[in-house]
Length: 82
Image 1 (cartoon, rainbow, N blue to C red):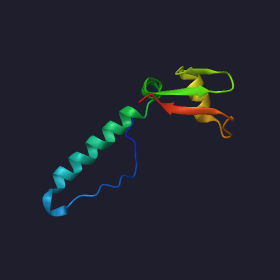
Image 2 (cartoon, rainbow, N blue to C red):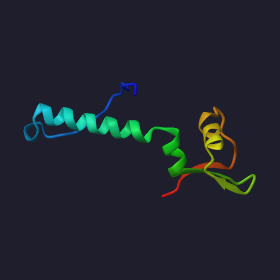
Image 3 (cartoon, rainbow, N blue to C red):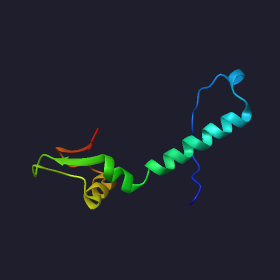
Image 4 (cartoon, helix red, strand yellow):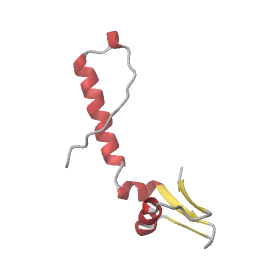
């Protein structure tokens, strides 16, 4: 898997954690974000509610189209299933 380079802002009390503990926490957070940033994961937890067509779907192709649009369609919403 390709290592992702990202900026993370983590607020910690420096006197409570060693440098190794901080690096371990950053690695865990980065690994978790890498897992949840996949399209398969997004298809499991999100859906597109299209009020124009009166439908709700979590199909991968529909979600990819909705995420990639530069101009969003009116009354089409990307919602979290939670």
